[in-house]
Length: 349
Ligand SMILES: [Zn+2]
Image 1 (cartoon, rainbow, N blue to C red):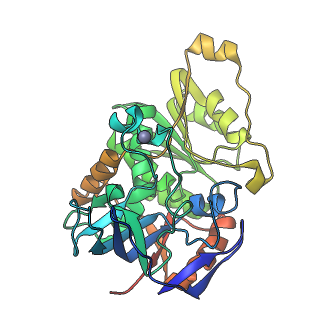
Image 2 (cartoon, rainbow, N blue to C red):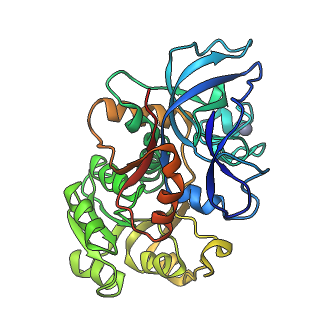
C-alpha cells in the first residue's frame, strides 16, 4: 500500500510503498478514506518521546471503512464506517472506567505516534478505539471530529464550563481546533471573543459566529479584552496557542472566578521558546481564578461530537484538502501558520 512515512524525529513524511498492516485478534483493519492534518501531528513528530519507533506512519484524525476484523472482535464488522479515538489507553483503570481515559496511568501512547496511523491506504487499530460514524456525517467531517472538533467539546463544557451569557476568549481562534472552539463555545451559550493573528483567520472566526474578533497584533490582548467587556474581563479563556505570552495575557483577561483552559502545546524543543508562564498567587486568590489543563476527550465525548455533526449544530471547517502524497506540503503550511481551519488528506474510493 501507499503511505506517508516518517523516518526521523522532526523529519519530512515521504511517500513509500509498504506492506498492508497485519492485525492482531483485538484489532481491525481500516481502509482509510480521510485523515485530518493539524499542528498536533507537526508538533508531536518533532517533540522527543512521542514517536516510539521509526519508520512511523503518522495521522490520528481518521475516518475509514472496516475491511477486516480480528478473531476476538465483536464490536465491529466489515463495512462499518468509523473514526478513531486518539489515545491508546488500558480501558480498565479507574480513570478509563470513569470516563477520564485521557488520564490513564497505563497510557501506551498516541495513534500515529506509538502505532502507525492514517497517512496510508490502510491502518490497523484496536477495536476498542473505534467510534461509529452516523449516517449523514461525511468521512471528511468525521475525520476531523476525532480531534479538531471533539477537543473543544470537552474544553468548553467540562473545563471552561461555558454557560449562557458567559464571555469566552478563544486564543488561536482561526486554526483547526480554534475555529471549532468558537462554534462550541457559542453552542454552550457563550459570547465569544475570538483572538488570532491574520485577517483570513479572523474573518473565518467571525463567519463561524464569533461575537467579537481581536487581532492580537494590534494591541496587548488583555487590554483589547477589557475594552470589549466594559472592563470586566472574560469568564473563561481557552488558549490553543499556549505560549508564555498568550497564557499570561489570558490570566490577565479573566474576570472574577474566571477559568483559564490550556489546550495548546508548545514544547520548547519544537518552538525554541520556553512556554512556562508566571501567575500572581495574590491575583488567583483574590479573584478565585482557576487554571485547567484540557487533554483531548473520552470516547463518549467523541461520539457526542459526531452526533453534533449529524444534527448540523457544528460545521466542520476544512479549507484545504490534499491527496495522500500532499501531507508534507500540508505540514509545511502548518509550520508557517498559513492554514485557516483544518487541512485533510482525502483518498478516493
Ligand atoms: Zn486506563
